[in-house]
Image 1 (cartoon, one colour):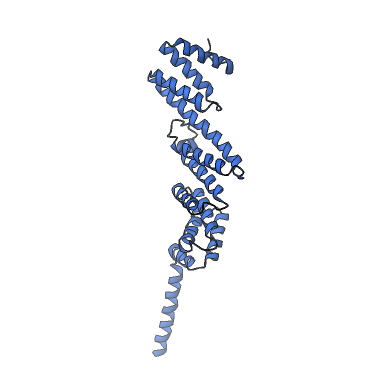
Image 2 (cartoon, helix red, strand yellow):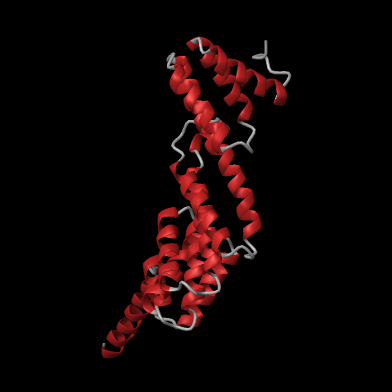
Length: 255
């Protein structure tokens, strides 16, 4: 009888161990991972990044950043964390990590990368959901994030003109200028529909003054011609027509 009880106890123990092994959850796996050393953790994060699983990489990197803030890998961990947050769509955390990195490491060799990623992240935030998923143009959406991105890239180029990211930053600034000019044109057209011709003309002139190297010069001039015509400001209209004829002789607004 005693032998039978012993066998039952062994069987129950084996069953309990089996159940425990089968019931391991993602949370338990994360706890096991957190008990590993910084090198093992970082290797796991890199594998996640290599596999395109940036959300998982960000989770591991964030754990390293919290547990080993002054370790030998701390700077690289923070840089990888910035990229992982960006790639996983966590823009707010990416920006917060960038700002902290720049503030605490103003002389680090990769500050230019952090500034570049700040601009890229702000550009990404400006992307419109409907435009990206349904190819619907929405140039009238709030451009505040584009303006922030422009300032990020400007700061990068001014402080680090020889940075390997400077060329791409300049190209992105040109794209942002066109985006901001389009916004002004959409606002001007809104004013035209409301017959607020002074406001419309002012928006057109703003585009000429601030975004002269964008494709939005033509619509800006055409809006100015139409607005001044409605207002009876013949001299201003004629000057706008002259500029329009000189640069866009095929415009229908030329008489």
